Amino acid sequence: MEEEEKTVSFKPSEKMLYGVLNYDGNELMATISGYDLSISFNMRLINSLSDAESCADALANVFYEALMEQLVEKKSAIFQPKQNQ
Image (cartoon, rainbow, N blue to C red; front, top):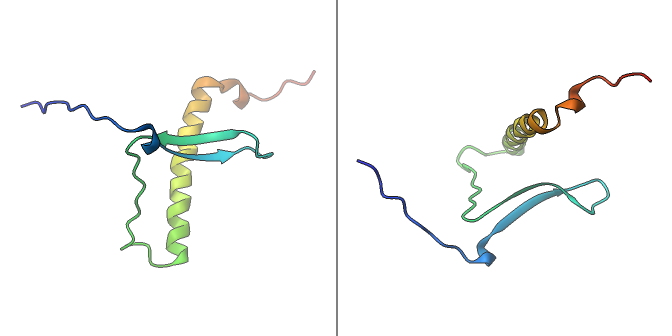
C-alpha cells in the first residue's frame, strides 16, 4: 500500500542557512540550506571534547566526500597534472 504524499509549506523566515566563507570573507564557498533542516547530535554518545571532535571530523569527511564527487563531475580537469609550457 502506497503512502499518500503530503504537501507542506514553510514561511521564508523558517529557511535555515549555514555557510563557509572564502579566505577573504567576502563570498560563501559552501552552504547548507533548506526548510525543516534538522541538525541534531546524540548527546548520550558525546561525553567529552574528544567525542565532539571525533563527531565533527566524521561530519567533515562526509562533506569532503560530497565535495569530491561534485568536483569530479563538474571540474575533473583540476585533477589532471599541469602541463609544463
